[in-house]
Amino acid sequence: MNRKAARVIAWNARSHKARRTTIEKLVQENNIVMIQETKLKQKPTYGENHVFFSPTEELGNAKRGLLTIIEETFECCEVQTPKGNQGVETLAVNVQLEGQSFIFVNIYVPGETLKKPEEWTQILNPLLRLGQRVIISGDFNARSPMWKDTSHNGNGRALEEALPQISGVIVNNDGPTRIAERAGDSDSCIDLTIVSLPVLLDVRWKLLPLMGSDHRPALVHISTHHTGREQVRYERFRYKTRGSSITAKLRNEVRQERSKRVKRDVKKPSWMTGEVEKAWQEKLTASSAFIAAKKD
Image (cartoon, rainbow, N blue to C red; front, side, top):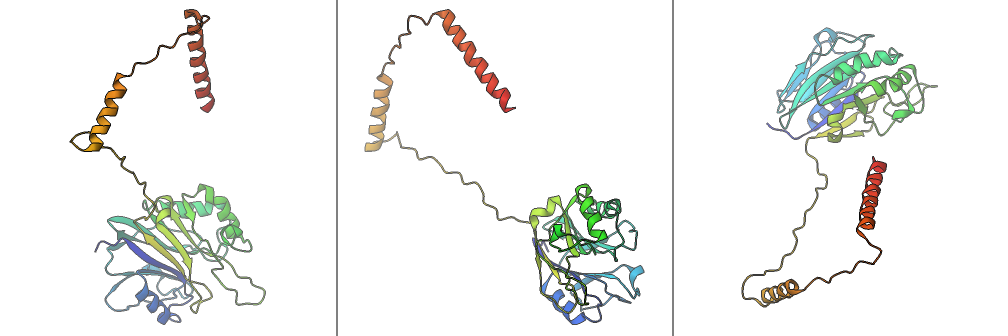
């Protein structure tokens, strides 16, 4: 099936088992669901209408884990991601939308593990090079006012410095994405979505309400067709000049009268000699060249 749009959910559910009912509802209402911190021991099944992706080596990890669920009507396949460092987990899937390949990367960055800008570039740039249209979404554990947070942490400062060297854009426009539950903690924006430049105009990002986890799900709407205003060209009105109508006759008479007119001879003043006229033309040429050079 040739699909032109997709609804994508990215959510740190903090345990698939505890949020299974909510995840099943999200799967039914959306096309792609990317879950972090699943703590799964084996791939789940929700019937025969979806395809499930989860790195085999992560199954059984009691602390973390990724899961990406895609509606079966989408043509999709898993894409090998560069091996992460510092415990960063990534899972990439190639999905076809209107004949174009979109790479959806599910990501989880544990704690404050990436405190150097080069560590972020070493992880994110290879992911953004997986294809022309890449969407990376998940839990980055990075805080910065640059993406609506009220504070900083080590991950956030390093990511801020790395952004000019990263070939992608953070599209978060609201917060917080995580609600503090412990005394002394503050709400934060640590769940981010980064997209490559060719897909920037195709993406709309929105936060959803809390659904059991202390993280809020993010809705990423992908559309491959734009509804931008097109330039309207108006056709000039033209009078008919042929035929026996009154309008045609009048137009022809006016044209004939204009053709009979003789241009008046403009007498040059006595001081406009050939030498003065030549100097005047040279001045006009020089003025035009000066204006053109000034614009450049």
